[in-house]
Image 1 (cartoon, rainbow, N blue to C red):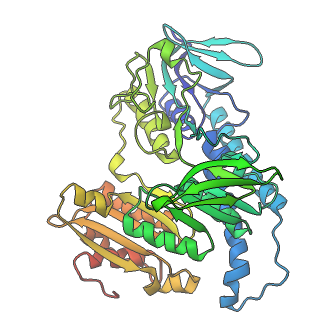
Image 2: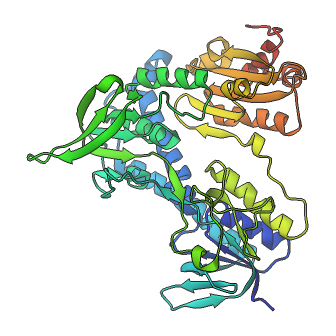
Image 3: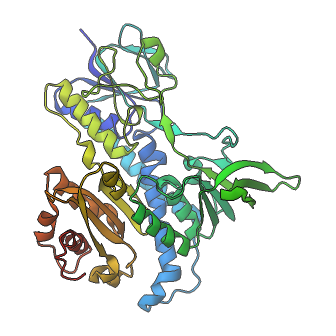
Length: 466
């Protein structure tokens, strides 16, 4: 008889959520984590701390540039980076402590140490107190991902950094080059730009946030440039080096052979993440991988090794915390004989810049490429009363629906509180809703969500205000 019904390796949003749900289903659970605090990258050095810094830096930018339009005068404005970082740390501590209490409440045994699969089953844990072997009927791998390193621009933790270090600078750098214009690069670039850093973003692809709808991507680029970010699309980093005087520069190259040396204090490399499979014992256990270094799983999240499952950033799909959480729940529910599932077609994606970008479903480019007949409705926040009252008229809502059935295919939002607004679209799409469904729903006035209603009505050219 096994010591545990389930051993979860990794206490990030996928692992700890899976552990809680398994406990609710009556399983005996061990949650193995090598770091001091539970919560993984997301809570400790990712989603949560970045949002704390984004919020503080946005308040600072509004006080310095936006309040005057409201008739509010601010003199002697300054930023205390140390206090900002202390606030971030308090938020992280509160949430990670909350997870620890949830484990205690759910009777989940937290095991500290580095874990690897044992040949023949179970998990071997190496910890400061000595090794421990855990016998478990099932092992769930949820070790997340790590930043991709460029071979010609290796991390040194000081000058060339990952997002982890960029979340903890002691002061705003004078200048910073951000390599990569995805969510991480644009969010952290926005934070330090607002606090006075000269930020240059270099993206080798022809547009920023390449997963986004092209129209929305272009509008966000225009907005970020207006905020002072120097964004170079279609450029790539050719190298970097330190001069004799100690200065540091990055060599970039654009289309047509144009080249430039950009002097900078910091370089944030944010070109993506890769599955964190190192040291897990996958090869020894015989776990099958795909060509991209991800673990192969079936529709029940099972690997080819009996009793071993994997979720989150380790497997195919977007590397998103909420995707990992839903997979963790679905995996243990299927393990318990329940009908757990993840609807991958309605997983929202958000970039927390200002304005925010949020989307669910397919882009117009994807629908067009697939040959699906479609129709589009748009509503701009410059015509929304609540957005104008907030001083945030940038952006739009774009609704894509099937031309014949009117079923929602995708919703794309660039504007204030887009991360919250997209939830309504997710709900509608989860239940197979149509553009008319969203358009006929009563929305409170004045609210930002009215833009979603207007865009949905505009799909059939029945918008009232546009």
